[in-house]
Structure formats: C-alpha cells, structure tokens
Length: 134
Image (cartoon, rainbow, N blue to C red; front, side, top):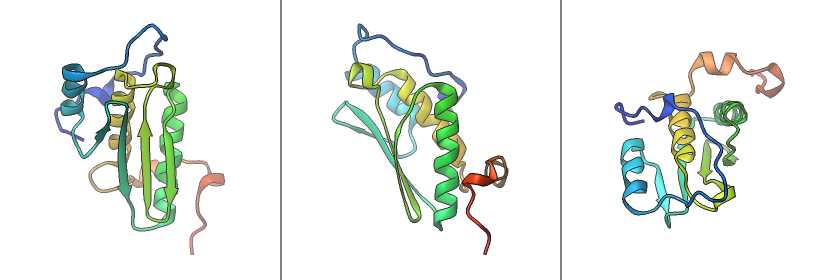
C-alpha cells in the first residue's frame, strides 16, 4: 500500500442507489491515493491479484479479508487458487465504484503487508479455517 495512504484507517460507509458511481478525476484521485498495483477496470471495479508461496497462506489471506469485509459490511468477490488470490471490488448497489471500495482495497493491502500475511493474522484465524501442518 502507498505509505501515505490513509484509506485503510477509514470505515466503509453504506451508500444509497441515489449516489452516482465515482468517475473521472474523483476516481483518479482515490486510485492514486490507493496505489500499489490496484487496477481500475473500465471505471467500474477495482482488481488486484496477490501471490503467495502456497495454498495455506492464500487461504489464510482470503479468510482474513472475509473477516474484515464482514466487519465493514462491504464484500468483495474473491478468487482463491493455489498460490494466488484475486480480489474484485465494486459497490453492487450503484453498479460502480464508491469510496468504500478503495477503503476495503487499502485494508486488503494492510492485511497482506509488505512481506505477506503476518503470522499474527494467521494465528488469529479459527482452527477450522487453517490448513493442517505437514
């Protein structure tokens, strides 16, 4: 995540259907603030793929995103595969991007950290979602 990004400190806010999706300069400003390889696709959604050395770390990251998303009340589409997790974000109610999408994207980067999922984040998960140690 961009070291100057304060988005991860914010909370996702529910929006109404009357709020238009972000476009143009307002979208570009948030995208620049987010940084860190997030792609804006057709001004409709955010997308990023995270790479991991194995399935268990990818699964732990996916579960941690799920817990944060549930807490925030804002839920991404997540594709889990061996060694990678793809996150897609948009606000379904407005069929486009809102600030909450950028907030949750920043929170995903914060979970990932600069060196992968932190051991503390993995230990904080319930044993039912952990891979067995070999």
